[in-house]
Image 1 (cartoon, rainbow, N blue to C red):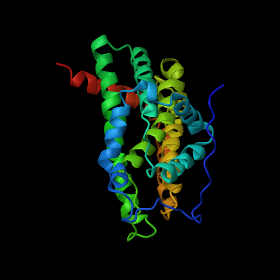
Image 2 (spheres, rainbow, N blue to C red):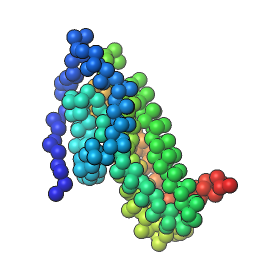
Image 3 (cartoon, one colour):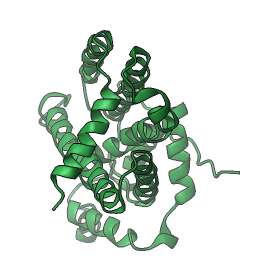
Length: 272
């Protein structure tokens, strides 16, 4: 049976949020422990120590990102109370996500009938560009928006950590990955990769589900932070998504097929 960690305390926007004591009376060692550099160094060191990673808890998070993502994000708030940081200090989730991304990208490339060289390029591109590169951009945008416009009290010492924004992206990316790279895979060549109107409906529906799940998890990640306000504005992209889905499907524009062609084009155009 999978290890089920205890549920963290529930928080709401009206709940009190108590930070650890940061008064000058704390020792310098304690203060240094919570610097961004120290946190990053600790995370990188644990990245090469598989025995120190809690893979059961990471799998629990992946499971609940589908059935109850609120529980996963409440755990981030609980971590702030116990470890004075919202972002993960255990790289187990990142390691598992990388493994899922590697396997699903290989399967996706095989379905596209890529050569070995193009398959390697495809996997590298998906990992470094689609996941990490795009994630850095999105995390930076949301980090700026949340700290610039959504703080309840901009003069306080509370702000949204960039590392937390990237963690939120990783949480949101996993369901998107499963929907587009795994669940869609059996239908890719049999139904989706055709000129049929049904192909556009099925392909676009997969993309609508995946991207909707992505933005919903982004919203949850910031909505759970009790020192932010007006986080419902992060749900506005849903309106654009619905409109794009209706227009593209009505015009028989198959987004899944377009993305497959885009993958093939950028792989071939970057070939020596």
